[in-house]
Image (cartoon, rainbow, N blue to C red; front, side):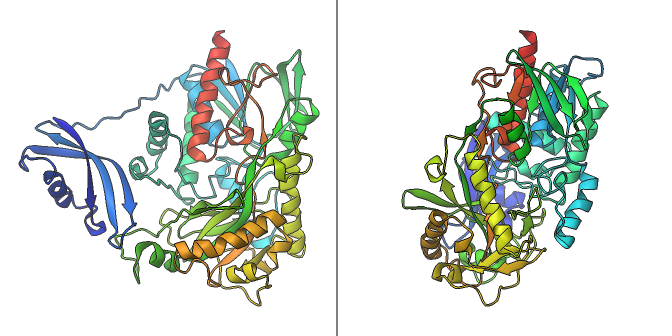
Length: 517
């Protein structure tokens, strides 16, 4: 007999099999000998009361032998001489599309404007230390996409468990901690993800696929509403049959290219605000109801939301023990994001704190690029407020609400440096006013959150794509251009590593169907 159960366990006994078995035996009337094994399915922290516990969903094997086995067998094959399909972008969507094409017997030919994970490091060092933005190689562009060097969170709101588990299994096969399969908030870490991405690349190449770095899509040719060819680096023309467009939400030049070619686009709601950072000890104390976080508990995270004047104000991409990173993709703009290493052992906790932006908030919203231009204007204003540098505009939290320019800024994680600024003059008025109303409310929900021990840093603007590339719900092709498969975040259909990877696989399956028909 196999029974699915949920137990609670104190953090200090999380890895104690005897303690877990004892909890199981409280729920099933069998002897310890009859309980032959157990398999943990999911694990989460419950800190709602002063007694913090782990909730564990598991399978109890009673009188039956437990034989571990892989739930997923990936059909790896040689596609060197197979029919090709082209992909733009080597983020999670592009890489997982390539892997799925291989499973489908199709040769992936992938073009990435940026560099491989190793070479990206040099450009990120220049960005952080010398404040030099390389528009083709940065935190957003390059092998693995934005997630490679901005945290590696594997949390997703996708409700299709099989699809999520399949993606996680692939990451585990290539070096991720198996714990991501059971943790309700799985996280790989920026220090580990590059090696995993490189392993995925090596698999694609070993199967006969192609990956070309420093290869930017600069033109497309459409004839009779059908994609006919692409141009790479302005002079390499490639005749194509299908194209999976997986460029991510920051490739503004791609939106402009499509718009200029008459490809239908749509402005899309997104969210915009700031990064907020506190000492991690403050968040630990508030969430775990303790003076000092015990070693048996990880650095605490939070998720907060409030409605202010009919608009959502909410935390986004929370990074315990993390670092705020400069994520501009062009000179003349300031964009911030956050990441954490696998151990999440830095002294600060940061999160996006953003306000919902609807099309009604944006001038000329009928223009497909209106939301994109709105986003860029705020990023440019942040750059100008920081004396024309990526030393980001910042303010202590209470000072921001009270309209005071901070006389000093506390120690923080943003390596390029901060500029003390009134962020109300950077952010749109309807964004700053809602943040000012929400912050004291959040302080009532989380002790110490609303205080000058923390800072806000501008601007957090790349929460999701401000443009949608519309596609057919069944074929996943663009609604007007045959052979063009808009994919994942850059097309407005996913958000985060796992959901982008899932969408990449779906587009690869759609390409197979397209070829079969």
